Structure formats: C-alpha cells, structure tokens
Image 1: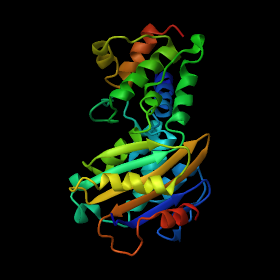
Image 2 (image 1 turned 90 degrees about the horizontal axis):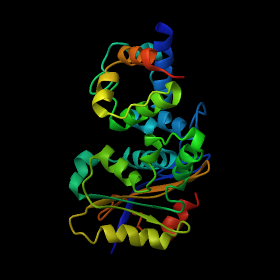
Image 3 (image 1 turned 90 degrees about the vertical axis):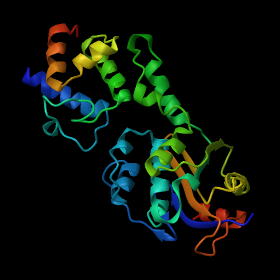
Length: 203
Length: 85
C-alpha cells in the first residue's frame, strides 16, 4: 500500500520541528504550555489534560495547522492512530499518589480520567470532530516498521482517506513525540516508509 | 465571608486548572455549571473532593451537590455553616 506523509511534527524536551522548520518556543512556564502559547492555540480544555494527552494534542495541532482538513477531507474519513512505550504510566503514578495514604485518601477524578492511554486519541478526535477508526498501541520503543503497519491497517478500511498517526510518549518529565498526517494521495513526495520515519524521528 | 469567597475562587482555579482565569474573572453569583465558568461533570466530582479535603464536608448526594455548587456565594455560605476543618 502506497501512502504519503503530508505533514509532520517532532517534539522533544527542547525542540519543536514542523515540516522541516524549527519553531522557536519562548520559555516562560512549563514546556508543553509554552508550546501551546507559541502555537497560538485557544482550547481551554488543554489545561485540564494530563501531560500525555497534552503531547498528543500539541502534536496533532501542529501537524494540522498547515492542513485545512475542514476543506480537504470529510471528518468521517479521518482515522486517529497513536502508539507509545509507557502507555498512561505517568498519569497512573500521579493517580496512585492520591490514593496511597489512608490518612490522605482523596482520589482525584480529574487525574483518574486520564489513566488510559487511548484517551489521547479521544481528545484528538473530539478536538477535530473526526469520526474514523481510532487505535492506540503500546510497544517497547519507537519502531518505524510497526508505525507503518499501524497506519496501513487504518487504511484497510476503504473509506479512510487520511490518518492522524503519532508516536506520543511522556513519562517522568520526558516527552518524545512524532506526529504525522498520512494520506493516500499526498501533495508532496514524502512516502510513508521505514527510512523516512527513521529520518523524521531522529531530527 | 468575602475572605472565604476569595479563598474558594483561588482553590477552584487551582484544582480545576482554570489556567487563564483569575479570581477577579469569576462572578461570585454566576452559575458554576452550564454557563458562567462552564464546568463539566468531572469538575463537579473534583469540587466534591475539594469540599471534603479542605473543609471536611462530604457531599455524597448529587441533588445536594447541585444546590451547593449553584454559585461561589452559595458554596461559601454552605462551607461557612458546615465546615469541620
């Protein structure tokens, strides 16, 4: 199956790259909040998200800023597929702290709702009103071959025209994000293949 | 009462991550849900935890919760009359 990467975004602890352009992020608050402000996004729910969902949200926002999906693709034909290493462990740990001590037992509902990794795909779908399939995979490390397979599996559904597909890892203060917008007929020549994904991940 | 209202506003901003809102932005008499601050059901649960953790008040009835969380002023009056912390 021949698919193409129409847009991509790479976020690490100290850099943001969108479609080959390094984005300058003024440092004022937390790294993810600084990216949010630099990207001029207005979505108050962002601040209620856990860090994993924030990473997924930002990755998808930056990828989609250069694409007008409202005009290019019907929302029911867009899939969302994500993968990572630590699942929701970062938020699981935060939640555990709220129930660790019998004398200070106050389980936080707002923390609890993010103790599932696939909440990330839900947040992205809600934000963009996409209605195609969504999936979240957990694997040991970023694996371009599996990433390709996950994206290709979304396109086995003939109604799917595009897929917001991302590696979204956050644990213990470290973020590692690669988001892509994959289509059947990309407007550029960046084919979805192992070599290109390897290159983008190592930017 | 005004002191408790201000304290409550600060706590709500912190616990609900209302990042771009200041205490001055919150109308003391405006509805907390639906309009006003536009809080959702998860926020309601978080407010229940706040009442228990900070003021020793257990809100275990959703109908009662609806009454208490009508506005910041109603919340503050309820806390003032029922707090154990």
